Figure 1: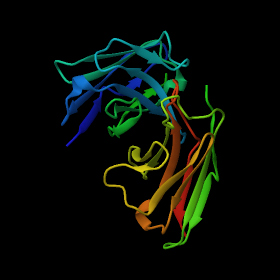
Figure 2: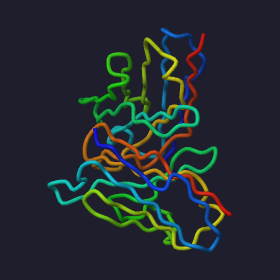
Figure 3: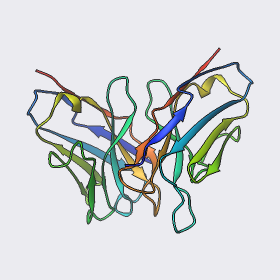
Figure 4: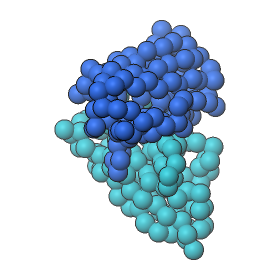
Length: 119
Length: 112
């Protein structure tokens, strides 16, 4: 079945960097767009970034534009989120999510990885 | 950005009773292709979100038929015909007609 497993979270100081990974299995990864969505402690869901199936187009929330980079390696069935210049407000659980076929809404989500930005 | 507004923000329901959540968008979610890009997700306690309903009224694979979605344009509703204990959690509506995809604030459903 479809499985998405995030990793790479941790505690980082303000201004630091972190790279998240999302290992995908159970579907043809190279055929689907992918998202990163985050959830700050006790808060709702915030879309972060989207990448098309072939990596040709990438989109970002204004709150992370210029600091975060979404990418993918279709040969490794893996999605990435490079996070630079981290701020306290980036503290959240980060979920990767698979798009439904032919659409850009999320139909399957991973369990998430926690990022804490603190000195 | 499209603003999604859910009401109520919390709901306490007796098992077996119905429940209803409203979601309003600041712009129409009807696309020129004829589809309406409104979705419902449930985040059970300690879990990641799961898709319940896509394009207003279509149940995702494995979703019980006690869940139904309706609405058009800017006004949408999720209904649970008979709430069960496993339905507790936070329900989110989301639009995907344009980026950034935006979510409602969430409606917390608990059992009385």
